[in-house]
Length: 140
Image (cartoon, rainbow, N blue to C red; front, side):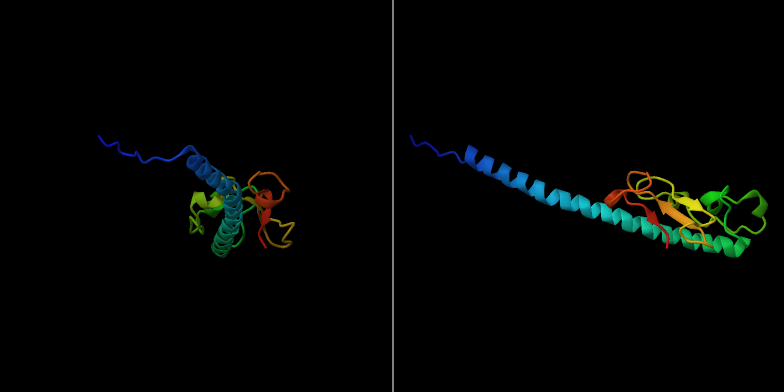
């Protein structure tokens, strides 16, 4: 009677594969997440451009930018005093949030852009200041 030799992995082969996978995870995964944070910043800037375009259309139709009390909501729902000239909605409500799910901040009297409006996103931490993914983003 002949015995068949069973084909299987040895424990050394399994440990070697586990170590290779672990090394890849240590070196590759952080780089991938770093790229994801930069991508979200790029998306936030792109969405700010969309909001700026909507604000320009609002200003063209209504003769002014939204007041601070109206905020960016005026791009989605007509302010009571502009019912006759408002030609919106100028954006979808989902366009008013940054990639981290926070609403963009709007100031009609710009501090960063004097004589214009300011738009801002405070990044992943939703707090002023920060670096990397937590860095603040402002319109230019």
